[in-house]
Amino acid sequence: MSDVLDRINADKRALVAARKAARPLSSVEEAARAADPVRGFVRALGAAVESGRYGLIAEIKKASPSKGLIRADFDPPALARAYREGGATCLSVLTDEPYFQGRDEYLVAARAAVDLPVLRKDFMVDPYQIVEARALGADCILIIMASLSDAQAAEIEDAAIAQGLDVLVEVHDRAELDRALLLRTPLLGVNNRNLKTLAVDIATTEELARNVPADRMLVAESGLYTPADLSRMAAVGARCFLVGESLMRQADVTAATRALLTRE
Image (cartoon, rainbow, N blue to C red; front, side, top):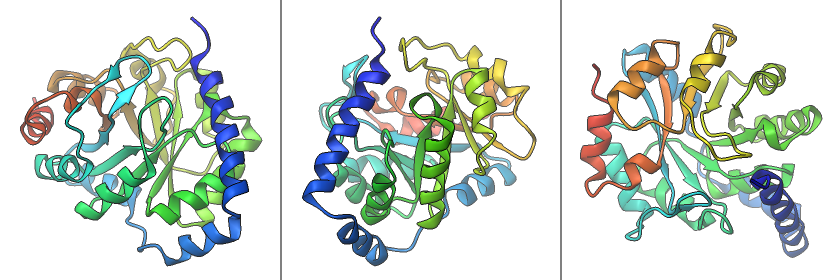
């Protein structure tokens, strides 16, 4: 299979260049300063875990490159409310348009509907996007180690910290994990989906968890469908989870979210 991630990143860099040409950084910075106060993303997850609950990052995602359209009746504010009522701790909203049919407006609308912290789920390749994320009202951004060099990842993390944003750094193998641990963020996601092949195996989290220091908050991502899956991840130290597709496909999202969070 061709390297999907390389293609996405190339397209993203072209898009960012076009956005920079259309809207200067100074204008985006002004909008970021006027945005609503940041909601603590890491703080919310930590509070959930401290209280004995799972920290669920529930994802609002219309489509994906591997599965196509996931949900036809796509209503971000309604989904945000359903996730909150089901017990989600935070939201993740896809804003990548070409590959996930996301939009910036979906994040704005979802965040306005609830009081939960929100992750801008996108492929961050330029610090400009971080200021843009804050201008949209995001509380956290994603760093995908497979997409960036160490220097680029550090630059984007620095930009996020400057904006008061939390960072979820994502890895899917040991080499990326070692690189991610050079960053300052405590929030470490292990993506069970290989972004280069799109294959999913939740054993990825189990394999990498033993190398995650105690001062990091481990988040298991992708391939999680049942309470048993969450229990399996919790057994190796992941008590926070990012779940999207398995919930987005359900007719009753609130009930599905509540059921997923049932402790075995």
